[in-house]
Length: 193
Image 1 (tube, rainbow, N blue to C red):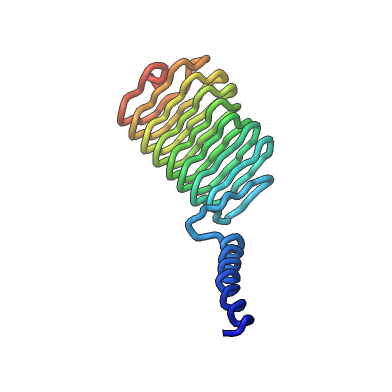
Image 2: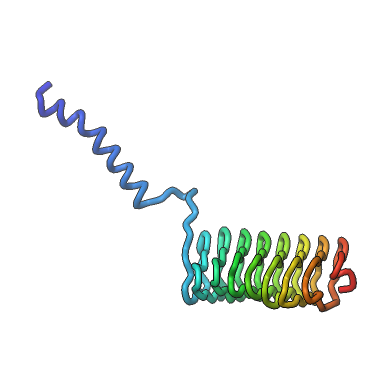
């Protein structure tokens, strides 16, 4: 075997390995979920995971999210007619508003400003915990529970169909509302709602 043949034989595996590495960078595997950021607005498109970055505003209309929708610190989400396979999560968000949508997981708004969930089907729970401004759950179908804890801007809970429990504790002022059809228990501050 000549020296050039031996050299070519040794470099082929290196070239193949380099091509495989570059392909993995350019074409990620189907199993890796991509995260997209929303600044401004998105319409009727499908994304894997969606993030509303810190301090920005995102408006969604008819968007489909195959994973989770996260709303970061001081960010605002206004969503209509969206479908989310996973959860909608807002932690320290300025505002989270979801209307006429379908959520495959839970809606969780924690330690933020205001929140509204209206006319939405939710497979798991609604959680409003330690928010500073008004939170509202109106005319939703919730397969899990609605939990409203330690909110300081008022809570309005009206006309929801809840398979689990309606639980409210340590809110100031007390939650208002009524007409909620609850299969489980109405507890504490929500006992009469």
